[in-house]
Amino acid sequence: MTSASEKCETVDREAGLPMSINMVRSKTEGKMGYIAMPANGIHYPLYFSKSQSNMLVNETKNRTSAVSQPSDQQTTRSDEIAISVKNLNKTYRLFGHPGDRIKQFLSFGLKQYHREFTALRNVSFDIKKGETVGIVGRNGSGKSTLLQLLCGILKPTSGAVEVNGRISALLELGAGFNPEFTGRENVYFQGAVMGLTREKMDERFDGIAAFADIGDFIDQPVRIYSSGMFVRLAFSVAVHVDPDILIIDEVLAVGDAVFQKKCFELIYKLQSQGTSIIVVSHDPYQIERLCHKAAIMQSGHLSELKPAKEILLLYHEMTQEEMPLTFTKIDGHREGTHELYFEKIFVNGASSLEPNVVLATQPLHITAEVFATHPMDNVRFRFEICSSNHDVVTEITTIGLSEDKQFNGRHRILYSMDSCSLTSGWYYINAMAGRRNMRLDTFQHANEFKVLLKNKDALNLSQDQGVFISQGQWDFVETIIL
Image (cartoon, rainbow, N blue to C red; front, side, top):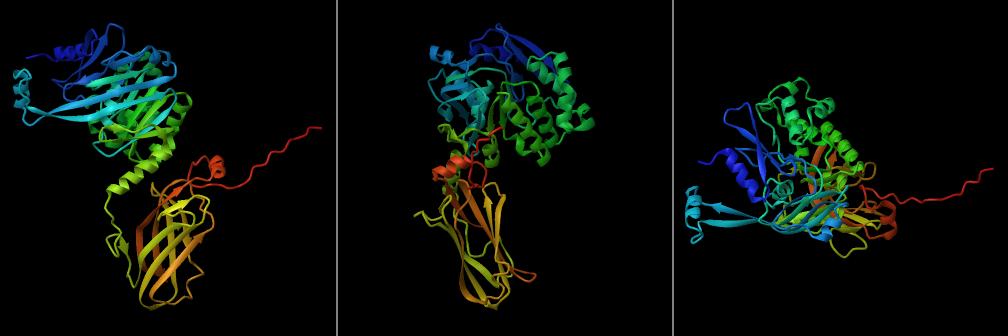
């Protein structure tokens, strides 16, 4: 049987690098981690025998994980490119039975006992130093595989990955932490993997502990940590080791609101210091807030990098096309007595021929068709316009306008906005109807509409950021000093 150290050497030789193996035994019997040290002094990944999806925190300088060497043109751009990916492909062999692996090995390629699954197909992109890029896509589209290839955890089937700088990555919850080590021991252990001396980690430890804010649990085994404590400590370590490149894979979704705010503030600080960042998230608000550019991963294909808001708009359209129409007359999302209820709600823009499409700075019309089962008055209506990340952008009510109206049978209610001040993106409407202390109908997510910003003056003024277009006027006056 091949020993664990021999296995590690075999993997590294496949990458074409002469390795010496430094073994670090954990407190758990039978577990062994390895830090592979090639002749050029670069730190390579830490692996644990039970999982190759551990968090990779490695120090690399002008590292190429590839089947081919970078060209002269790529070398001349090394000063401005943090990550360069060329024609990257990753194919897995899937076996129906564990014994099929042995059969495949003994067949010498004469017979195939596996089927192939291609997770990445011809992926190419460049990320500049100091740039923050977001990647969105459905589960199973290949996002995590791409990140593991960038970090060096996986080896590409073909193609080239060139990484310039020290990578700090959070690829999955608790990955890279030995469950039997205390939080303090794991902090110093990860620092050692990054190539930092104990003295340097001593200087950073107070900041790491303060940011993680897990109190006395820092000296307890991490196996007793909650998911929130795990991500607090892991994120704190990742950002306090001075990374040139930070990779975050959906871990911010675990933390609470206060911790997420701290994370955003620290990420902004890293951005101001020129750190390159890759963010994978299903939260469009995080991508829009953090990223300069973004791309969509779909069935192993990565789209072109474009402005984040443009990509999010396109991704929302793609997901909506795949979702079945769920708007029904009265369904599980409806609450109230339904003595009066909403039948349909439409959103239109006066300058757009497409339904549910509104041009920013142009008129917007909301039309609701309601039905009253018997004569009633003192009815109030309320519409909420919400952004795609479920924040209420504005609220519209008929208080003081509809109480004296009589409703019986079918009626139409119209609301018009002279100028839609929303930035581009997808929005939806919640509709409510009530009288006195009675809820008649609540129609959540009644309809969606898309806002497009094509007004050049408004685009220049707002840069299409946030959710509100301020259409004021600038004035420039020369000040004369007497």
